[in-house]
Amino acid sequence: MRVKFELKLHDTVVEKKRINCIIFDWESELEEQEVLELTHKFITSRKFFTSRMSGLDYVRESELSIEPVEENANLMDKLELLQKYCSPPLT
Image (cartoon, rainbow, N blue to C red):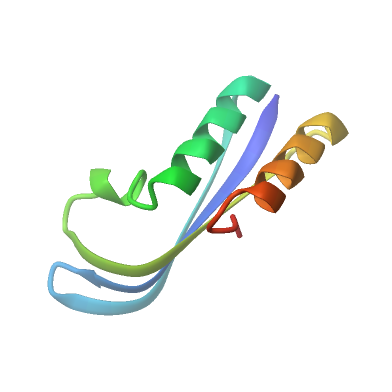
């Protein structure tokens, strides 16, 4: 399935320069289980994406949104359940 990701990094410091917000968006072809695993990793480790970014010194807050490019209600139902029962909430 094709899904669109959007990762927002708020109040960042990149190579000693303050940046209010950085937004990355991309589309990927992933299996449903891969999307769920990626979501779980982001929820359990907020540094899952940012730890791989060179030059990134600080991030106050990060947000990840995932939406299907093709309509897939079953995946969206599962993501909503993850958001409902996981702490901190996925935004």
